[in-house]
Length: 184
Image 1 (cartoon, helix red, strand yellow):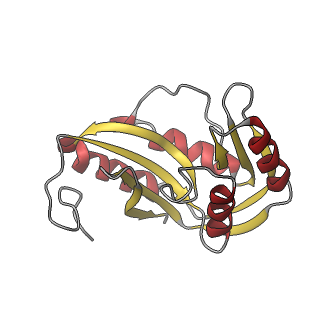
Image 2 (cartoon, rainbow, N blue to C red):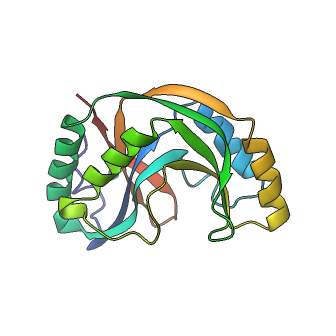
């Protein structure tokens, strides 16, 4: 395992790091959603791996990363693998220009996990109440969001969630998984 205090290429971390915590949507399901995002013209389609957010982008001091690692390991140890069913479309419009695939099974597990992740050294307020989902289109024109919604309505995928990932937003504006945490 690569320690968080150094990147794989050996460069030192900046003083402040933007991190996120999420449940990954495995391939082929994740690739299908990412391809749909790209087909809708979403400029973030290839820079964000397909996921269910547990902790949205959060700036933390690099020196806090060891304590955050301990916290996330403790959270993972307190949870068990669960089944996730993604099915159908939803939207946050008109509040936010987002179309998503609904988490039909596993939503309650995500809520409990999110609350545990977003505690201790990662405690923070959210701009909106937590709602587990998988984004398929964001910030696009209304007609494109309408089309994304119609296509998402037919989506269905089921898989086992074995854990979650800590990711970092890099200087090239791409989210990269950094460390995986397995449930017990």
